Length: 294
Image 1 (spheres, rainbow, N blue to C red):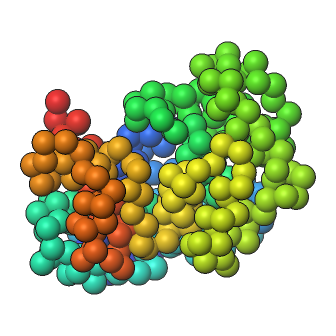
Image 2 (image 1 turned 30 degrees about the vertical axis):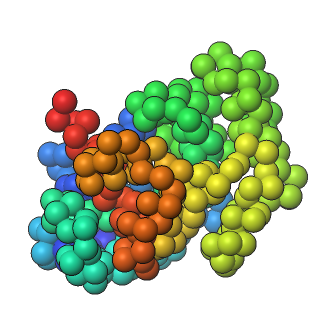
């Protein structure tokens, strides 16, 4: 086993990161020890790392532990991007201090955008979550992973594209997938193993190129593609205007009698660029906290 210590520039609130991760029942979060287990694929090999917070919001540091030295350096580089350790949050926080989102950013100061751990699981999760309330979306994703995926060192890995492509629609319907959603997930997996979709090259493409590539695939629309750009690739300037959570958050923020129109959302968000992804995250977080308090 190897251990590595990383120092990160503050503000960075790992406790709030763990709080949001814990909404997903697949995440192995330990609040007492401030740890999370991270399942990664490095060069197509599954590995599990443990991330533990040791510092505070202003001077954050982390202890990373893993089993094999073989992929250590590549795994750490991946972690830096997953947890947004590669870019200080101070500049982003400063950007929103004079905006309409000032109070939300103060309340959730140091909350980073944490990426899904690999591109395929991100896209599958986005498809599963389509048009479902968050609670059932997490439940359905958990059933999918624990039925067809695998566990290693206590962490859960999504089934591979090869595994999913071999599933029958009836197998997914048995865990409460709709027939159409089952077709979408299986079809996506087939596209990947047949070589028609290469997720590994997505990082090199522009936002629009990624969008154009993904929406050609049955079952993937703009909302799913935008969420993949945000939580798969970590693009900084995404604002999914069709997202009901963001619409509800804006309704509460501005005291609107109904959800905002697309034009109103466009108007609100002009000053939030070029960090619209963080505006999205903090708006989501504002309504998640309201739900947790109920």
